Image (cartoon, rainbow, N blue to C red):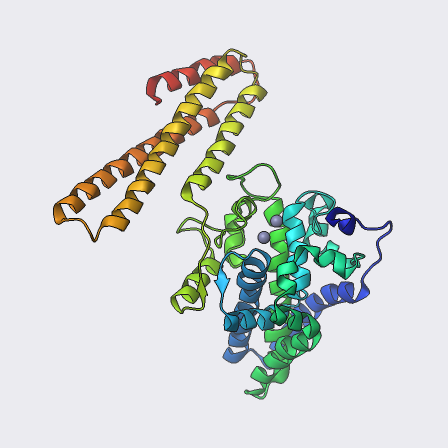
Length: 406
Ligand SMILES: [Zn+2]
Ligand SMILES: [Zn+2]
């Protein structure tokens, strides 16, 4: 059973190889690179070496290990899979089999003892501490949750040759790039050690910071958070609340302004014909999740502020009305968009004009419903903490509701 497989048997043994690697590489990366730069300067090739290795291995982890192998959020061509396997290995975060298995357990048992990087065991533990311990699970038990990956011969090959791959791609390759300028040590430090450490901690941040600080717009059932600041530092994996709510979606940042470079990479790969069928959660489901969280938070706030019992059903009724109006408006608008796209070629110019006008109408209705909803939320967010004046403020809120809602 999965649960039995995940439970560690008694005292946990330290994994010395992992512990030394994770603690010594930052020392070499920081002091080694600083010493080398101080004595021999920095060349453009060293910076390019770092940037190139950083981008390729980082993308190997986020677009490859995470969004493809662990979550299968799109269809991926064989050459691109090979690229992910080779450069993902060079990030030195274990083979795909291991990584994806741990990650699927993380999603399944998030915030529970069986979660490999359970945030409730502490921020530092979730960040890197969990790697210091030996995995006591038998491989056949651990890999029960990755049967699909075990069937892929390329993945099995990567698991078997993981160490030689690490050696060649993570260390020899950047050294050779440095050698082109007669500075192999510079190549090894910039494109090897410094890059490894930065990619490591960027990945680790998703398990620590993205479960500690940020907002929870899509689900409050677990600790995962959206943290916009983390976006640029994690190839776009900072929108972790959305990701935990909709793990089959190829995106993490769904708004155009949310920094999700992995999503943009996948758009480029699709354009080049290397990936297909990027899975997207329907807008209506995303909206429903958001509204559910917002309604729940208003109710919790009212209860915490000691609102009178009889007021709750009234507020609930208003919120439900707003929610229905907004969801209907979105469904109508989406349906019209679909229909318009489907029938565009068959219709006459007049028909098209009529439908365009209808679509615009639905769009306006959706935006109005959305604005109203946001106004309600703003009004509700002005609820103070329980205080002597609390009840007076409630009357004001009810007035706001009466005046302009739905
Ligand atoms: Zn995930
Ligand atoms: Zn997570």
